[in-house]
Length: 394
Image 1 (cartoon, one colour):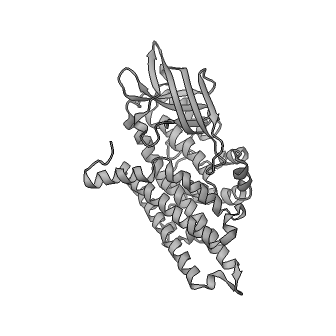
Image 2 (cartoon, helix red, strand yellow; image 1 turned 90 degrees about the horizontal axis):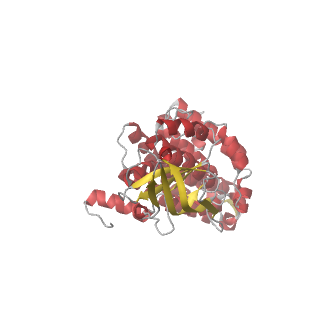
Image 3 (cartoon, helix red, strand yellow; image 1 turned 90 degrees about the vertical axis):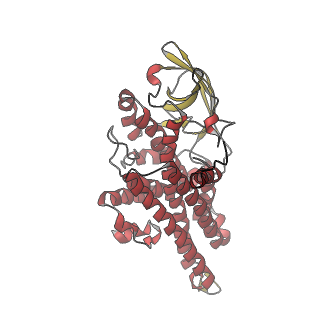
């Protein structure tokens, strides 16, 4: 089994599989099998048509991998490393599927699990874990991306309800979700609060964003909220300030670091296989020194990403995970994945731009991961403030 698992870990040169429990290996193995058997044979067509892969979502539901470590409420028991391995493997297959899981479990479900009432958890989480109920997380606004703390969507208390007005953009699953976690500023005290808006609520209008060149098989939305009325029971009681939203986001940056590893692993494995099969000048590409050198550099980067991710999982288990550690890992892994994928694309020559070889899809998709959940620049400045004590931005 170690040899089989190793293939999904970029040949596992540093024997990472030895550090995994039997349960973690099981999550990795069944997610990998799903990717190899069901995702890779069909995903290029979905990506090219910008079509949401409903059949794959239904198959994913049977794997028992949705929950990101939430305890109870129908969620599978997953360690932080098992959670990361699932994100890694899904993104090794396709960034759109990985992003879908990140929104469903990492953002929407975790918001309810971390900040919701017991009644809200009982109502929503079991169906979301089974993928019978879809969720979304509406924070980003058209004029507020990196400075999301400056959001302008307003929440006004009106008797036993809240009234929401504003706009959101880049909201994954926003046109599909049954429940949307909407972040809005309370006009009374100026604090950011979270609200659960149910599908079909009057005044909620979501439009799919078309024309994307990245993550084409997952749908993001522009959302307009006009007099959207949410009962007090739909307010997340644990979401009192923007820092509470930040707690949710810190966890997702861990998942993005693992996701970037999945993209880089795919690119490295594809390039290594291609170089061994492709003959030029009467010899396989792997017989040329420069090709070997490039493959080794790619492998070294993949191994570094693996070690980052393994340590992230251990720090979460020990309760020593911080938002600055999350920022550094997210910054490092998405930047490194871009480099590995670009190298793979180049090694494949002209074939590297064909979807048949998958690398160009990973090359496009990593651009979105590099940007969302905080750009490289913002993550760098977060860590910069931590190590210098000087804030470089407001």
